Length: 312
Image (cartoon, rainbow, N blue to C red):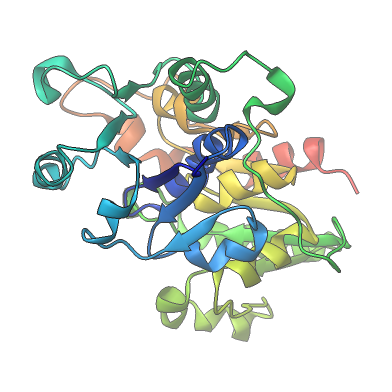
């Protein structure tokens, strides 16, 4: 019997692509040959040896029996194109936040998530239901990740990664406070490092003059290896938080919105979430708490949470 082929097409976000490895693993366990079509997560292919990774190509989609595409709010025409191009194939649209008035009716092949749960858990539940898989809690969040040989978990117990950037700059805590935090951690005997993407590096080179390390990661795989051998991560809502959660690395997520973070927190190891105080006004049309959350989260507060959750 010929093996069925499935493709998963996430949006541009690397964090979303990582989360969708849950669905990919469920498909693999059912006997599918699974390919992830994504430009960036391909560099983690040695961490996910059971899967194929390729750059997206509309022509390549015709080679699959079933295509799962994540709904992209910024590229709605892409979904319409795929529905037309793959009308003789099975196409499932994945809606992380489905709104009937906005997205219209869905087919019996489409998948929607429960918004009141962390995305990882909701994604696992939805794929199990769609694929008619018996609920197995111990395996439902499995992504198929395999730690490369030679890496040692938390090899550097004093190394703390600070991730001050995000795909959405509105989610970022203050640059000055991240630097202040790094200095405080260093004074406490830790080895804090600043981690940014290669294209962001030029804006952070100055921290080296402050005695703060700024390692260069050429690939996501290099960063993943470094994270796995570190003790802790402190950052904004980003891919790094999800990866730390998956690797069981303790971490702090600094965020603006309690509602969104309930959904986007790490789905594996629980995230230590820091939010602005509830007394800060967040009235409609003003949203002071969300728009200016950086001003209401102090370095002292982050250090307090770190000290209470750090373990060697």
